[in-house]
Image (cartoon, rainbow, N blue to C red):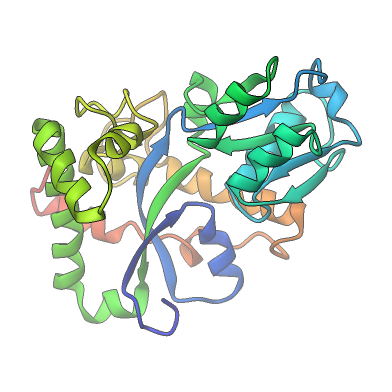
Length: 279
């Protein structure tokens, strides 16, 4: 994306400060979808509570949102974020490590969380992104990133791409059964797998991910009136960026706090809103 080979990318939202730290022409232009139950922190049965994690190994994706979620969970429960050893594994390996007992806990997304709970009797969920506190923080999410240099030179195309995506989300909400089949065919997935991710009824609440509508994304960016869902606040994108930036400083992923404008650009959403578009 930095080299101009790609124009728009959907990725996990914590990348914005990392891109800013490396001087990339990459900006988070919209919040995409919220993890709403897909991600969980699970502890093995011999771990009675967070205090028992001290000095133990936990499986996360180091440099990704699972590491931040685990760090927040520890601090919320009175433990320093660095009181555990973070083991960097992808999810199938994390589930295997939990089943084999080589880690005491893990941040897992589906289907690996359910696999672990079924395989390790007595294991327990101590945090889920469906919990109101985690949903309000909006910490585990995907976002849409754009090459800012390309967007400046191709503004109308960038706006059309963004509008097309929100038109598709609006269509899915009204026609979830038909849209899920279209998605399944296009992605070479089963309809059941699509439904596992985004649900069957178009609400975004019966799957594991909650897709943001245009208005919700614009509210999260602070370029449209009103508040986004789950108790989030208008313009929370800035606070989200600052939160992830601060955690990357803690973990040593970036060297300092970078101004939000180095990682965020909500102007495309603003232009769409001011044009009268509502999704």
